[in-house]
Amino acid sequence: MRILLFTGKGGVGKTTTAAATALACAKKGYKTLVVSTDPAHSLSDALNVSLKPEPTFIQENLWGQEFDVYYSMKKHWGSMRQLMLTIFRWKGVKNIVAEELSVLPGMEEASAFLWIEKYYREKAYDVLIIDSAPTGETLTLLTLPQVTKSWLTKAFPGQRFAIKTVGSILRRTKGIPLDKGYEELQRLFDKLETVQQIMLDPKVCSIRIVANPERMVIQEAKRAYTYLQLYGYNVDGIVVNRILPEEAGKAGSVFENYVRSQKQYLEEIEESFQPLPIFKVGHLGQEVFGLELLDAIGESVYADRDPAEILHNENPFEVTEFNNHYMIAIRLPFLKQDDFTVKKYGDELVIDVNSRRKSVFLPRFANFLKMSEYAYNDSWLHIKLLKDSK
Image: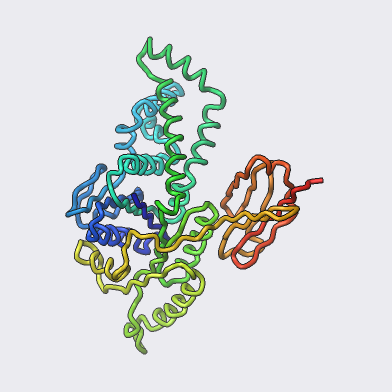
């Protein structure tokens, strides 16, 4: 199964592009499901079809779905939900508030991951298209396994035995399956890590960034690309959406300055994101919804190309061995020298890039290697580890 995830700044047209790609895949004969992970769903509006928390048939080879966290919790995590509700009620939280609080941090994103795991395991579809939330939430989704494991450790430090013991007592007396809830929580995190490994596989998952030819949007697209490379995800294309035709910028037109600056921004995108494939979509001059207009956008983006193919694959992580040291290279485009720091703790490299942190776990023998220096040039961070730490 192929997984295509669309991300970018809010309002750039991610939903439209994702829906158009799904329609193009379906026309190629792929059994395709397009899903929305954005809590502020607009996929139904784009397709002009009412979607549900379960896959909804749209037309031949095409289904759509809008995730709902409460529906997902009741469907997949009944025992875990009961665990959280019971804990909050023990603390004196009223029922209605406890119901709200039972949705754990990151559960919106976790529900998306579990549906993805289900579809991948069942091989239910040939292509899964993910209409993701804006960039920040997408990064939260993709780094969720580490975040949730940290949350579990802090919420229940060393409490597994206690919870199982108390849970068995409460089940006998009150019918409350706390231990089962905790085991369900553990299984949840195991599945999250499984799905993350699936999405890190460039043969399975490609991420496509949607942007407009505007300064703020391009800056966020650059940051997204850097962070996605940092975490090891394969970005295989950039879709530049809503490009105004040159005639719209004729002298005296309200769009004269916009079209002039748009030309400069398009040149910047071409220069900055090479060698990624860059797809340009002209502004249709109207609000885009419904299958007919989405079909036109799909044709504009992909033309004769297969939308499900791997458009680009570049390994952002390399290790080279020399006589007395190892050189680790990580591709992180668009950085400045003051944007990051690198530290080594045992067999772990910790890279801080602005507000994002990445842990790179090395083989165990790296415990005995000493980081002597690191340098950044031509979009690559090079880290030198000495074999002899004396």
